[in-house]
Image 1: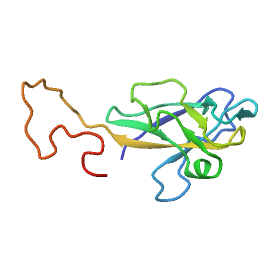
Image 2: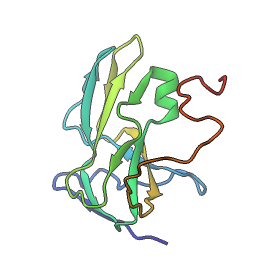
Image 3: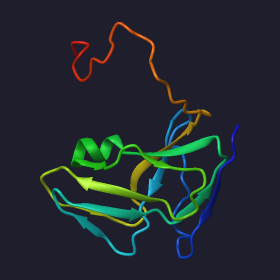
Length: 147
């Protein structure tokens, strides 16, 4: 089991640290730490603070993902999704939201706006090569497999 430290930033004592909403949930829900309601107009994007910073082991990354209910009901999703938080980042975690719906959406303090999923990051070494091994697919790109 990995331990991740969360530091609640000053003025955010009322904002819950990320938590899972069910026993087997993959993601930890993140709450909006806005000082006043923020209206997200259709097509508009805004960076929404969460009121915390964190420290995690170098073997992990945190991915910020949309909440399915907000996406389905209101067209609210995350840009740069999944957004990656690297293990060496110590600043406030923020969520880049966009309104893809056709109605304005108001984000209020404490509202669950996204989810955070932790993933292992494998140790990888990049090696430059003169030739690559052959495969059946070869250099076939988008749509090459018939999907």
